[in-house]
Figure 1 (tube, rainbow, N blue to C red):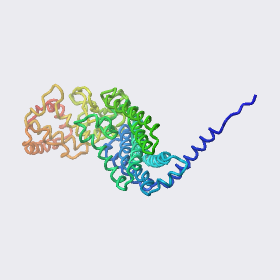
Figure 2: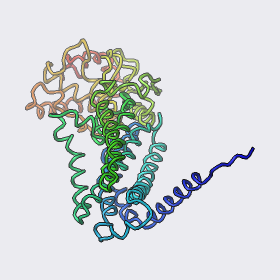
Figure 3: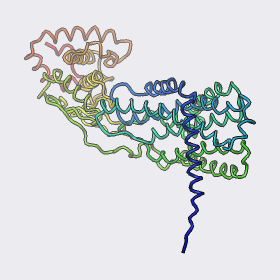
Figure 4: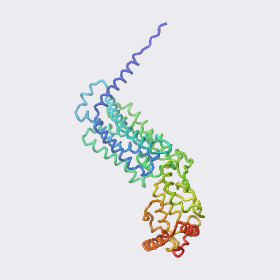
Length: 461
């Protein structure tokens, strides 16, 4: 029995794919986006870098920054795509190209693919820079992929929008006006987000730029699929409209309906998230704190390991004359957002650890009464002057200038800050004149009352 296998269909399909790849390669080599790519990538890098926090770099913030770079590249990519897609009609070549064997939508896809390919290459280079920086300076965790994917999908959507407007309106003004319009759309949620909160939920730029994405709250993993549906659906809508414009109405109408449905489902899921809070545990909610210390124990999130070590070294000379004194806290912990109130044996320092500010937090905690004691603002100005003086003395032992501490924190009234400062200068001069043994003896006797605001200048020798 003879079996005839028809291979013409497979061969034709392979030949068609090869032809499209050849067209894409030619378009990629001669695309105008090559000349604009450094500027596009540089603007994305600038925008993302400006939103990176000062101080410790974490993987959570880096992942969001990379995604933000992609959203900012989107308007410029759209402008370049509009210029490239509109060249046929702008140069009067539509009738000439109509005689070619490939359909017009094939050329549109090739243009879109070339713009997206080069833009994603610049986006990848930008992401590598951020990842290498974080890998060198970061100490905990790893990258989160979905914010970076949102940036890539935003670039693809921008190119599709550019192709759509370039095909429909082949004007020289479109490539210049379209990026401005898209930048306005991206910024609108920040302006009108309070009136229409849904705008922030469906905007990729606004969704990636809240202030509570950190190592404690984490990134909401349930936003990945809805954003993929939303942005991917909008991209498909753009191409369905291009196909309709090219004359293939019947198949395009079906694809347009499907694309609108997909985008609508994604938007609905974004507006009605499964987890109302951003802190949904996509980053581990429970972690083993990193602790270090020879003189005093300093503990915090392991992402801040380097700064915790630096802070502990800076605090050693400050705590040396206080060791063993009753009432002196023996542990310093990072002030985690939403954590319960701690005891008087533990001092809190700010979550984003800057060494100088940690020292200031610790000194303020040593001088002010904590939970259960008198409020420092209800004390007398004389007691505030003593606390201010001893606090500045501790600051100087840690290597910080005395003026790093504000007198307003120790005055009962703001207009008495100058009087507090003058009185503290005299108290600090008297205390500094004592020997180390006398200073130690005085601190042992008065430290508890000092924190409670019950010590006046008359109590100094």
